[in-house]
Image 1: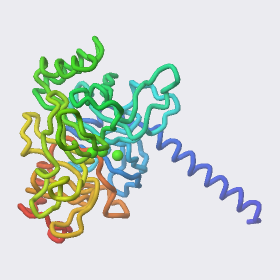
Image 2: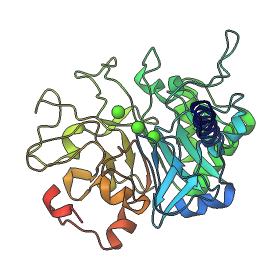
Image 3: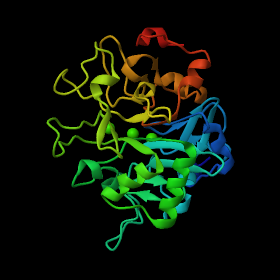
Image 4: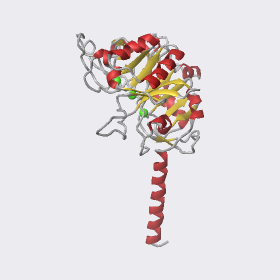
Length: 341
Ligand SMILES: [Ca+2]
Ligand SMILES: [Ca+2]
Ligand SMILES: [Ca+2]
């Protein structure tokens, strides 16, 4: 083969490769795939190639914006599936930074993206990365979510979980879809009237009026009450220096889930940074309230057989119970050495 022919082949291959990745950002797996995430769902921080089960669309590239499960391992939604109703014009993958799978049959998923909508223009904002999106088209703005804390700017959103009976949550989301999302204080009043709450974590730290200490990136908050549901200090065992100013470090919350009854002890979360003393954990791990159990990242992702053991974790939904029941249990101690399969 001449050098010229060779370069045509290389260019052709490169073009196909680019086509492939262009397709990766506009892939869909359809509504049926969501049922796989009925009990447990998550999202990674990074893109990777699966060497495990082939996604329904045949594309082995998994995006950090896709919704995944490890029970059993599957892609439940591509980023574009979640964003379908928002009609994203250039079909970009906008990332996935928080998720709560609420209703499989009605395809109701609450989530947030990593970046603002490309449809935002000078005249109107469709949504930002700090807003809470629902697959029925509802946008709960960051201002409404944080209204009880009176935060005067978009402070981001990187974990979300709905509290309340499922029928009440669905009724509220339907009401918001038909009537619009109430603004300001009326939003928290609407949550009260439907008997639901939205727990969430911000991307930053802020001291609201009436608070003697700042609310942290690593606190879990109540949108309805304007209170801290779980303080950073409460999430870890006493041996971890979590909490400012009492212990020294804000490890952040990058993902959080719990049951729907509002029991803080059922919280499962992922921190933003690692801890390199005992009990060891990394930012992609999932940890149960007060450090009562620990799920290493590599255990969540291992069904995809990625060529690494750590892909990050920035959204959690459902419960890790199903994974623990699958034969993984570290008991009451956080120890990395115990958890390597
Ligand atoms: Ca993600
Ligand atoms: Ca997150
Ligand atoms: Ca946070």
